[in-house]
Length: 372
Image (cartoon, rainbow, N blue to C red; front, side, top):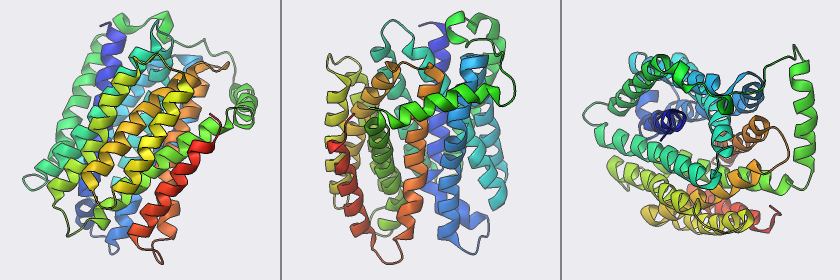
């Protein structure tokens, strides 16, 4: 394995592990901050991460095209270490919100650049599948370790992934010259000011309004369904399953996504077929999770792993700058994960969680009729 892939794979596991280590302990972090509205504080801590990713994914993707992908992979690793350290040592709600936003910005810097590098390799399906496997492994490990260690040390999982992030930072600094390679770097930036984004803005309009609009919407709906379940299932299941059971159920989503994404990278089928199969299983999972959390999250994760590989391969074949289209693709992911829970929250005052989850699954089913 070359140095580029080693760094990308290790960073994907660590960045996603730290991001998900917070999820099972959101209510406890909110209570530590002495917030008068624990539920609202929890939702803010959940959404701040995704809003950070959503706001930075596309501009960082465009900048990586101009100034080099490796620089933004390094930025993602450093921001992850900073955010983890902040969450470890502070309990003030506003500081935690800033840390979560920085954590999301780390994903915004890392993912478009990483997808761009992998999509340029000789067998992109295989490497994108392995990459998806590892970032889902990080998500699973984060949720599992957080639930497992919460009673011993509330921030135990956060400590583990923060240490790994610092080790990756040291590795990056020590091997930077050996890591630099023309395939990893973007074109030298010659545009200044608003000119840097003028051409990409025109391309974005064309990409969003063309035949690919169904693909972007499908990606948004799939990740929105995941976001709604992950955000509200801790409250829905409160008192019915233990914290450890919750962590295992949520982590099963990512474990199954790991397995299916690795397999999907080797399938010799069209991207559209992968997307439809993945969304079909995800719909079944979103609905069955209402009564059977482990089965439901497993099916949802397995379907999302297949669909994500299909989406990434379809996006990689678009006739546009790689950083831009990968930034746009990852923006749809984090738009779903961040905005869908906020939209769903509007309905929680007059709709119970079970009905909310049924509506969530039915909306996702609508993605099956969209053109990819």
